[in-house]
View 1 (spheres, rainbow, N blue to C red):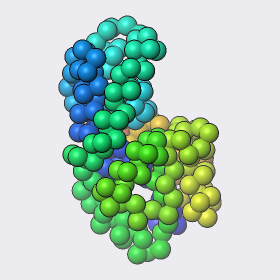
View 2 (view 1 turned 180 degrees about the vertical axis):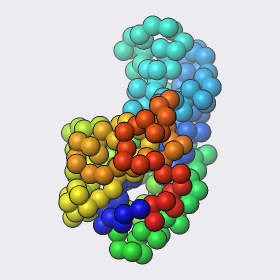
View 3 (view 1 turned 180 degrees about the horizontal axis):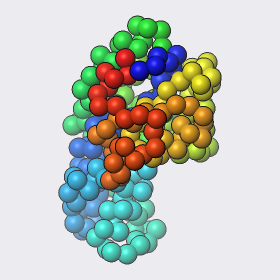
Length: 217
């Protein structure tokens, strides 16, 4: 694979399998308000657009209708503090991620995280898993005025890395990541087994699909 001066990494489903902790928090919030718990297969399908979207989809699945905004608010109010207390209980860094980051840094590449996870959760997760030190820039869902799939987060990361968009590769797992990269004008690859909302990796529109993180080196 072509070598780049910088790499922008999505977080959930790309660097870290966060589904177990998100799933636990989601079911805590649902059952607190007398809704049925959901299967983790569904939680994995809903991850990627933020906590509120995930809660909304879980409620839609049970109610078979659009939930009231007040209902979504109540469930989110139970989800958010619970998740903050359990953000890294069961989340795991994907295989070969650490080794790959080490190699890229040794080559002199500059690395960034570009996630739609809000800063209070993203930074806590990265610190809990000892990942923060690898990244010169961490762009979260509330860092810029518009989150992914808008170009803003990728452009912000490039500016913080001191690189042009044609010098970086975006590594993600969903159409949200691909659309962000395309809007910014940078190359993009997707991991095969991320949180892709049921869309086959080959159909996400990336420049390539990588079988292993080591494919980046």
